[in-house]
Image 1 (cartoon, rainbow over the protein chains, first blue to last red):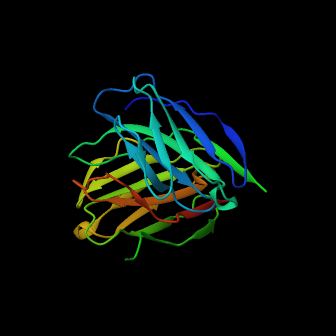
Image 2 (cartoon, rainbow over the protein chains, first blue to last red):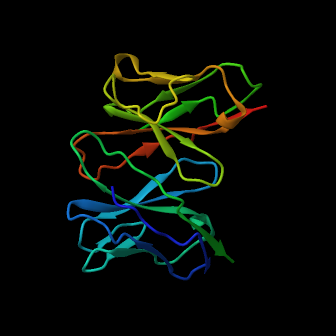
Image 3 (tube, chains in turn green, brown):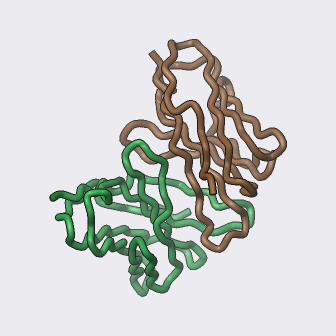
Length: 112
Length: 115
């Protein structure tokens, strides 16, 4: 699976959009971009994933560049409860399972 | 629908003692994972099961760690004997092969402290 690079930490004001970048310059054509987050003392939680098109769900939007070498997770109106570590993961969806390889993630702090 | 259930949530033991963690995955999920998460780091895979078969255990320290998934449902992860460096959160996750999103569902984890 391709390696990802994320900033170690970011701050965001409550109510503003949080834009979390991720670089995955070695991504392969069949690798998806996944985002998970981990709130303190909980297990990681799936947010969104995409292959090459931009995606949106009730939690967030995922913007993938045309060359697929980077992506941005957007939380449109961050709340204090969005304070968490956000993990960007790229992987191939295989028939043998959906294993995830986590990096260090970005620690997002949403401030009042 | 119940999520992934793990127990115990917290465990404090002295080094050289044994410890066991239990995981009940989401009903119908055929793939089960055990991850270990050290403080300030992302989770690392220890072992992955497809039904009752361990298909990836390359990161499991086999001298002291063991795992089983009897009948392809619940799973137990055991450490014997525990060392100071085993202090971490042990996360269990499950997924359904062939699901559209490929999402992994995680439990809340079992936090182990070895004194």
